[in-house]
Image (tube, rainbow, N blue to C red; front, side, top):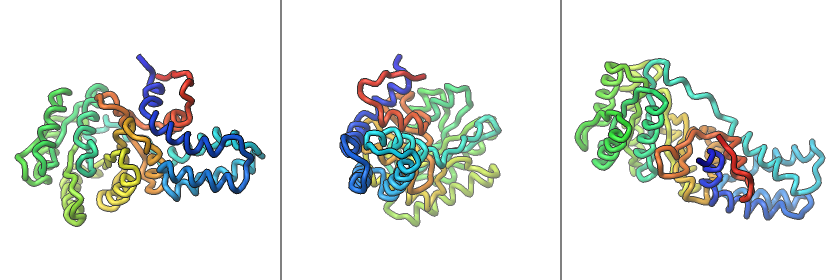
Length: 312
């Protein structure tokens, strides 16, 4: 079976080709001068990394060039890879152990980004790792979301706490909290509605849900994961900023990276919001949701097509 790096490289193939077409062209056969820095800055912005992140990377690159006394543009490839890995790693902190009592993860995001599917995949992976998992169908505005979560639950042997369509999300969450505690579960994954047409309503609903959670367990929710669709590029960055404001997001799940050339938005999201990317989706299977590792991502982004594909 192909190693993880090979799978990641394949999943990022569209992003890698787009990124290297833009950035690689700037770094080919040139001397390092002001024009090169300007062109590189523009190419990074066009690669969806975000304006501020592009400025930060070029500023850091200038300093590396000065310190290492580099003169050829080709030498900047490896330096840029190092800087991108470091930028992506800036806000990463270790996830708290699931084993320390009941851990509650609240999952938010707009409809259509793969939020419910992501919860199902997370449940599958935590069950595989030996944890006792429960899911809560807190998106009561879509009957399809409840049904979808139950399908994933049956696949993984995970129960879903639910009520009827249109029920109070906070009531569902309360029931789920009680069930998780009484059954001595390790992990509770909570789905939420993804409506954005009225930010005030969304904010109040999420606040109500979080109040219910925190009343039952001090310090919970332990993680608020925002699911974003990588194919939307800069729209994903705007969603991250909005949900950061209304939900206190602690981590990002970036889905559909295998279907887009806009994967550079990973840099923009983490660089401009400070929210770490926790998981990335590089395929449709349950095993294709993977923990995010900055070094692996940067290496796959800069990998040549014929690079030896090794991994664990």
